[in-house]
Image 1 (cartoon, rainbow, N blue to C red):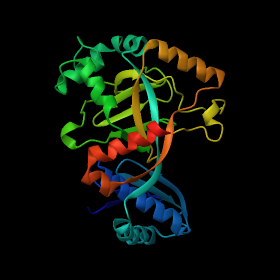
Image 2 (cartoon, one colour):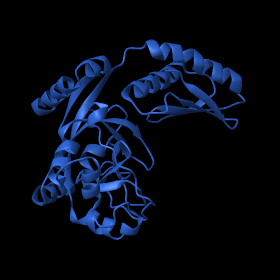
Image 3 (cartoon, rainbow, N blue to C red):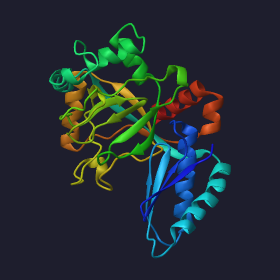
Image 4 (spheres, helix red, strand yellow):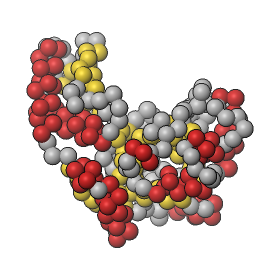
Length: 291
């Protein structure tokens, strides 16, 4: 794939690795942003990675925009030859699907939805060909997900399903965005799932809610004392469906400071994944369950 470069005013260059999201595009973007960081190019002030693209902010008084562009294009060749392997972690995220809080919220905004007579998850199950919501939940929670970007609001992860394209869930966003979304809602839009780190507006379909905080600017949550944001690009996530009783117990554990996400350190190889998707996912789950 060949990157597309665009100037954004005098201080930014936007690099689009691919128009479509893929793990190949993510790894190319990751390799290029890592190369920019390691090169310590004079004048670079900020590197902002996204799903299949990234943006560089630089000081034009320290490096001419044309020179900055030339540096990025030079690094592209290096990135393409880099090994697509990542030392990362797999994390289990509990999800209370069809919870009462997101249901109450979605019912207030049915006039903005494609199907006012169905809930978000009922609509998603139907258009993806599942016979029941239960079967859809099994599909959503059955395979791991790859965190390709953190943003939109502080700490919000975009998650890409680690299955072949024929099995990927596709759900459009609301026709018009909501003005309210409960904190820690598990949402879906296009080919991405997400967790809304804070309460606010949103357009993704709402499937459930997690009891696990992922953003804490006060850093009072036990596992967020070192850094206020939990996720980083390259993390791997496995959803775990839970009941109302399990949800309440997890909320109580978070408040007591005893909740700790289940996770394991893993090495992810894109070549191995492309050669055997289900086998790679099974090994990731083995590592998580052994942790």
